[in-house]
Length: 448
Image 1: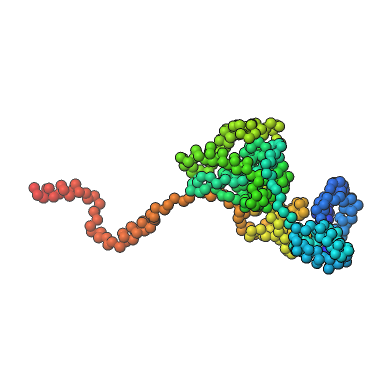
Image 2: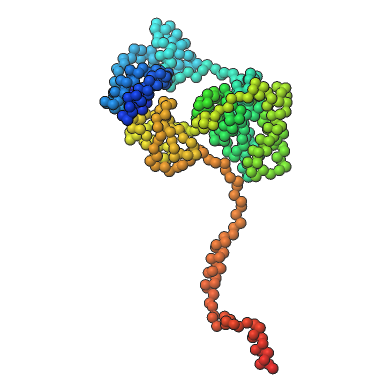
């Protein structure tokens, strides 16, 4: 109950924080309060709520008088109405047969005891006890499925390709299920979420935003950063179940085409530059693959994708915000948070709460703080030891050449040491003006 009261207080504070500023005039404060009362807000329990102007004014007066503590409601004493024995029985029934739903457990308890809590009450209690329902059996995936329109479903996967500069190149690709179009693609030298996001972002900028994204359970696709990007843009992220690859046949067939028509042509040549590999692949995709009639659809992928018109594209600002990274942190009692060795200071009213830190993985100097999805200012850097996120690694460079074993400076030092060890007889040095020709002439006159 104390945590609940704290969350309610933080919700109230997030609404009246700006309106409580003493520098605002009465007209400015009234305009701000009317705007807050005229729209919905995400409440402490995650549901949309509206707050009247009178309530907002009352919270503002309370905050000015008593500070943040005045916004925290007094805890209420709640008496448990469900007998503990029935809740223990529910846990035993779930442990005995994990496939039993909460509704079925309620039916069993009614038959055994004559009365049972509601299924919703049992469901909450079982979840708190770590006995959440896992489902009764496997669910079928897509099978023989085809999306009805472009951008209804994209399928993403990774393909291991040739070696570039001594390293294996990885192709991240996202395929439109309806048209078989390569929406987003990029070769990289690491199989991580950063490279997957780069391919996805290029596809979103060029082909629009899909309704759903279907990927496997590889580490680049189960990252919380990719989930946040999809959630920000309204994309439903779907993961295939391990051991059940249904629905992935189209992209596997497309990868087979990549091997048979593109990679085969690289077998006789050497690619030492990743940018050249991406340029060659883009030329093949846009000039050959997208313009050739597909054997299943009877249309070229580009023609089928654009049959309904050019899709709406997201703005650059929307893409930038979507692909920012975020991490959750609990604010310390001294109103500070740490992020990979860096320490930041935030508002004191958030002490003890869980906040979301939003940042560019390549610039940890600037971090935005959000509470319950609402921005509450910037984090003030106090100690910066790392400017780049540890997972934000650039493309690895080519392998270093084999060393020759020649140490130029060591050779010079050895030659200098040899010179110092040798004694120099200054009488043997030639005098100024002397030369071999003059000596020969002098010897010739003496002989004459």
